Length: 204
Image: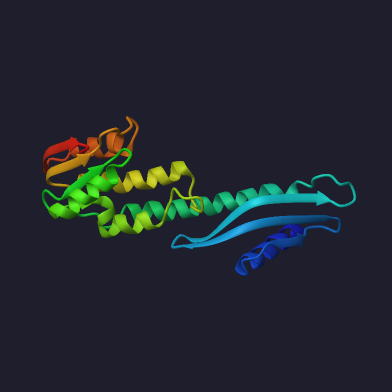
């Protein structure tokens, strides 16, 4: 166990230097890990892209530390997810009356943003909170979250955006999937929002 702890210490020191790590985990076993570092508000992201643990005497994989590495990565992801969920519950996505603009479906974001900019309205990503979350690129290849976790974070913020809308809300949703965040989260929240008078949807 203590040898594995030494290995993890070596890994973390290597991460700090942003370089591949080769650490000795026992007299006859070597752990090779290639990793990527990214800095998020959620903290340091450890991405293990390749891991090989071979016993030099038997030429067989030596497994004990691999499960611990997987656990470390999973714990990091869970910590980032909790942080982003907290952010999604407090970020500012407020809009003026008649100001909220929604979109879903291919190409509709550009249409919604053009309409919002031309008419003094706001998409969620144009609010300070939505802009910050958009910049985190939670669906990108270097995201600290799984896709399902990213969907939960965005759904939380989207629900709050719809719940805070008032007056007439406009949605560019032509071609939106039935399971999209608009159809499963935002639209139901708009229907339950007593401050919303009309929900005008289309796509052009």
